[in-house]
Amino acid sequence: MSPRLWLARCAVLLGLLLAAPAHAEGLLMARSQQMFPEAMTTLQDAITARGYTITRLQQVNENLAKMHFKSDMYRVVFFGKYSQIDRLTRKHPELIPYLPLSITIFAEGNQSIVVAMPPRALEEMFPDPALKPVFEGWQRDYQAIFDQVRETTGF
Image (tube, rainbow, N blue to C red; front, side, top):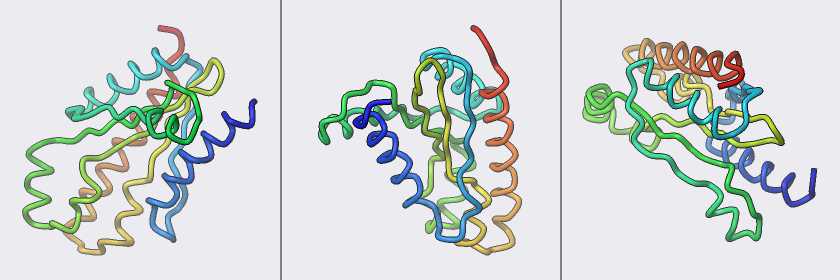
């Protein structure tokens, strides 16, 4: 692996780590045997299969290019359920910086990796008992999404 590619991956992971709370249980991570385009399709299918709407696909490579790294294989997928996000942000505006939900996907050779902050980590920052079932539901959905990406082969 080239030093530039290694540094680019470290920059993305560092960004995710800095966004996570200090006492988080770590990151959710899954490796897919699929190449990036197929893994991206699998990720989007897994998200929408659970009732979420994809709201934006952000190309991380633009920011990496500013740091002189060349890669078009980094994306952040933002998604949510409109009614749930609307209800949550009205009752808990402190959640706005964490919504919509997101998962990062990047290529590593002929494979792909998905990474995200575990939604249950939000419980540490927002201990309101009314939010616990929401965070647990997101955690279950993330785990199912990551499992589908990990287990899908071919295309």
